[in-house]
Length: 308
Ligand SMILES: Cc1ncc(COP(=O)(O)O)c(C=O)c1O
Image 1: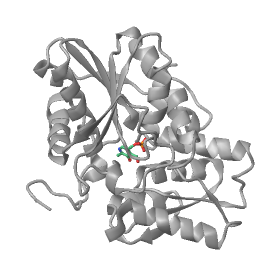
Image 2: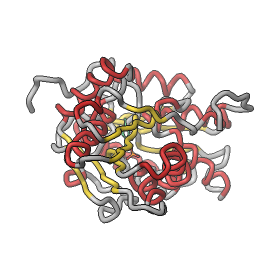
Image 3: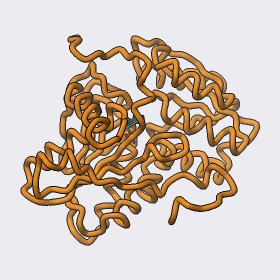
């Protein structure tokens, strides 16, 4: 479906994202094509638009989300932006729980849509936000619809129906490998399930931060985290550790060499794609651009040249 179209609501602008070839990065690994699916082209600017919208639609259809309840969830930012924009557009109230040290830009974006923000302990990271939202919901169960992106099957379903299907339409049988980072794991779980239905084997790799304390915002180091219920460690063919440095350096290269100013998890995804490309002599690796780099202009905890 063309992006050149007239739409009745911003909801209809979700999906149908471009797939761009990484001509410069590819030169390091001749014989292997590398493609990046630009999920930042979604209206909320990230890979989380599809799952947020799917979770809301499925909850509305089943009667779990109504206009007199408030959707609440723990989010590091991008899912919150997506809930906020669709909530504003469709007329649903949104409350987000996030660690208080997420960037000011993230807080400003979600508040611009009229969303209520609740802050959790920054020292407890995204797991602290999950614990706080569970407490709030257990105290007032009738007030909230807890969307729970870490356990909600509509999250991976969005990528099964959207991301995975679109990748096959865009590259067809050429695809040999898919790789994406693990946050909630929705992208990897849903896309992998769809790619597995393809007639030819597609090797699907999950990328995760190599260290527990890392600077790849949006991604989870599973061993030291609350493991998402939707995550099935047996589904990917491989789980690849990604060093923060690799992700940050690749994000710089993507801006300078490809004109793609992306966030660090995207740098991590493309770093992982190049590791796959180095191992295979020929093939076609597809990965995901989760969000844009301008979301990270505000200072973050992890700094280059700084060791924990
Ligand atoms: C910037 C960024 N990258 C990657 C991810 C991981 O995606 P998923 O939750 O589908 O595993 C997220 C998810 O929150 C994210 O915000």
